[in-house]
Image (cartoon, rainbow, N blue to C red):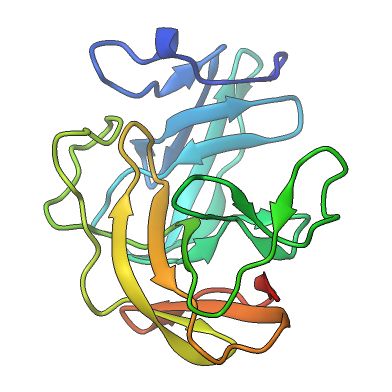
Length: 210
């Protein structure tokens, strides 16, 4: 893209997410993806729902033409947490204050979690909800789009109580998972892993505990 920006409310017409932004579009398995962010070196898109699993074709079209077809692995779930500094799972308390090492960012107050705390983890790729979210739209705020009870979250290799796991209202593809940090969790950086439908999130995500 010749520009760098995220989608705005002006790009979302009649509740529909944009499939083209600043002359940039992407198809996955021949279906238009929803373009969330464009820049000269990176595009962020929301993959369209599809029943075809496995290796699928991905193509990018700009004002300069269409790219050669590449491939990506399409799965029904591919859970992952958003990360701060490539290491710490993005997490908040019920009052939306941030959970993490105190000195992670110079100008952003953060505090570690404590055993027994209720915190919310933020991620993507956790798959279908009940009910199914409307295709190509921001998540409506009048209904909770919940993940199945089969979701497991491990903190320090210990199962945490999952209090609620839903798609975030007013967003697209963003899941919020409220858990209780297991009692007895030791201090320090503790690995956090999600498991759903037989798929495990990537290793290397941590929660800082005191």
